Structure formats: structure tokens, C-alpha cells
Image (cartoon, rainbow, N blue to C red; front, side):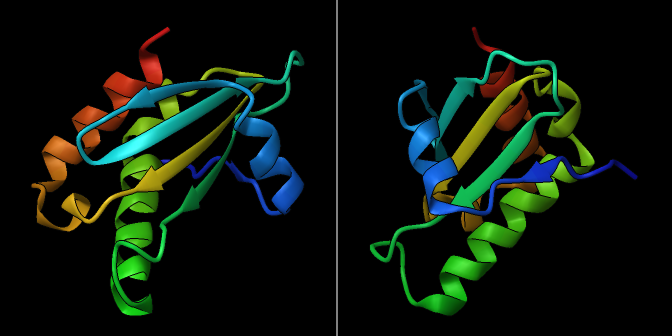
Length: 109
């Protein structure tokens, strides 16, 4: 299977990515920031409380994490940080469609 990219963990790292570009998708909002180095790509996941209770938010987060791990991690650019803001539509979407959408948004420049 795929290798999961490094994770963003600190709030300051998430906030830094907000300065980057935004790519809207049907299932999520992708924020991307070029760190300007040649380190490994890093990714963070967030789901707002608008989406639902903790159980629903965790399911959205797990589904996104798995889609990145098995499919979209290869599309991430070196030296970039990504924050994926999940929407509730993630749960209803076929997994193949979710993977394709993630890859498309990650490759977009």
C-alpha cells in the first residue's frame, strides 16, 4: 500500500498554510503552501463542527486520510504543506471518486 505523508501537528503550522493558495473541491477545501524547501510534503486534516458530531467528523477525517495514503500521496509536491478541510459530502461519495478528486486538486497548479 501507499506511504502516508508527514503530518502537520501544531496549530501554527495549520495557520501558516492558510497564507497559501486555496483549491475548492466538491468534497473538501484544499489549502496548499510552498514552504520553499525540498523536504517531504506534509498534510493536515480538519473538519469543522458544522459537519456534525465528533463521530461524523472523525469518519470524514479517516476517509480523507485513507484516500491520501493509498492514492493521492504520490501527487503531493516536495516542499509543500497541505491542509484538507473536509465536508460532509465525503461520507456519501464513492471512494474512487474521492481519490480522483483529491489527486486532481493536488496536481492543480
